[in-house]
Image (cartoon, rainbow, N blue to C red; front, side):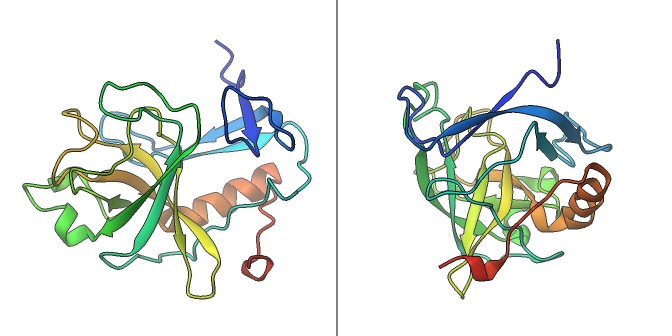
Length: 204
């Protein structure tokens, strides 16, 4: 099938309601990482170039990315958002869901009874309390974390969770760590002239 037959919704909150201020754009180009490994979820990241520019509004603005190499400390409060399933084998969400997921440091997440070697240092783990987690359908969504100055960075991209269910103890949601891919993002942006118009001082 046409790999670019995708539509990107912006300013969207409800999937079943026509919302004022929300717009849609066709995906003109999708750039996946050259070394993506689907079996191990390595380098699980892609960028999308939209078919036409987007005008920012009260409902639509740019997401910031962290500085290269930033690693969040254990316990950092971050938020996952998405329209994935509301519970294991449950219905998908109609309204955008948001959940607080504290970061689980790599030393803990890579323990044998956690994610072991599946969790690499290019991933961020968050959650794992058997209460709150990302779920099927949240993949590709952001892990947003607030900076001391009040700005927000996208530190993660939902990659995988436990096959046993969405809320499994010591099996936190695993995200691609965006700060490990800043050089790749910059290279792709320069090649495809993608604009990432975000400055921290634009945020309040």
